[in-house]
Amino acid sequence: MNLREQWEAEAGRWLAWARAPGHDSFWRHHREQFSRLLPPPGALTLDIGCGEGRLSRHLASEGHRVVGVDASPSLIAAARAADPTIGVVRADAAALPLADACADLAIAFMSLQDVDAMPAAVRELARVLRRGGRFCMAIVHPLNSAGRFASLASNAPFVIQGSYLDSYTFSDAIERDGLSMTFHSAHRPLQSYFEALEAEGFLIEALREPSIPEAIITRDSSRRWLRVPLFLHLRCLRP
Ligand SMILES: C[S@@+](CC[C@H](N)C(=O)[O-])C[C@H]1O[C@@H](n2cnc3c(N)ncnc32)[C@H](O)[C@@H]1O
Image (cartoon, rainbow, N blue to C red; front, top):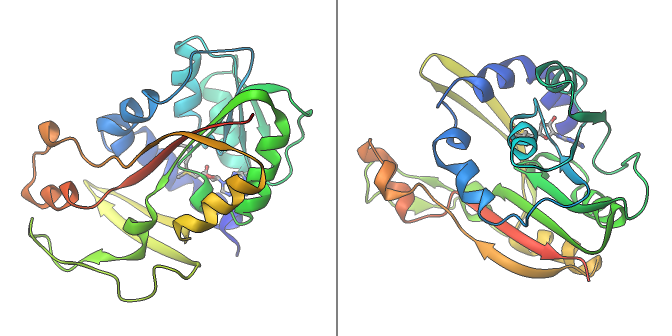
């Protein structure tokens, strides 16, 4: 199975995981950290890899006119059921059924690391963005996906056993608070993402490497993440 098919197979467990109140980092800190990077609402905001639609619904509540796009039929159905007023389209990010230059903001929140054909997806979102539009993305930080902490201790060494510079797919099975989820993703070095953006002429306006805000840490093991970034956030201009 490719990543797209693996995400559809995992859709039921993702729905439970993503919607459990306060369970995922999205609710605890990630949504706020990412939202600070976003420009104000314009004519059309695309949420590419929208999943069950939690970010689309937040954006709509902030005044964005949103269309969500995802390849998973189950997640698109769940997004539509949760808010029928938000447009959703089932499509591969690498082949968007949308007109050239139709949007002024394209967002890929935690989806590009899960997309099989990442450069083709970046090409497509550049095509549907008007000149002067912005592309904002969040991914698992490539340093994070390259390695592992050796233990739960706050000073545990962070170890890269393979190669940071290689690209490869991997699956990470997690159980927490009675919920289980297997994340199917690709590790790609930073250069892969920046080459895809460079090929479309994007200019980087802002870059953040967020981790867990110290103020919300309740478990000692989370302190490891004050030394290594969890995510990479970018805001890019399409000149
Ligand atoms: C980690 S989830 C994030 C979902 C959503 N952005 C959120 O934060 O709730 C990754 C999403 O990428 C979607 N995805 C994977 N491959 C895709 C592709 N080729 N085209 C569009 N979406 C894809 C999956 O179906 C899944 O909904």
